[in-house]
Length: 50
Image (tube, rainbow, N blue to C red; front, side, top):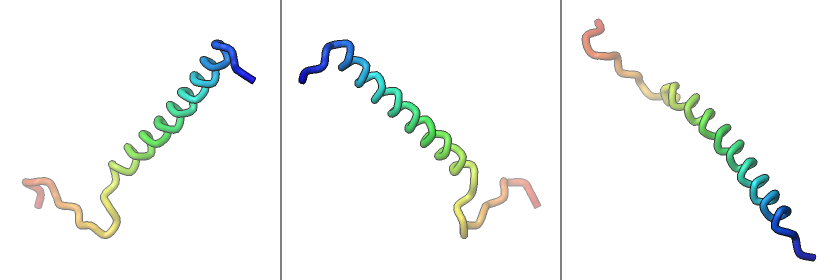
């Protein structure tokens, strides 16, 4: 059974949409983790603070 052109475009578009959603969630979680210091690592104070 062969799919028509519109069906193939729909499948490809759906796959692109799902990929975009997964990458968006990954980007948001990566950004959230980047704001925190790694566990067990000392955080250096900015210069000029006592």
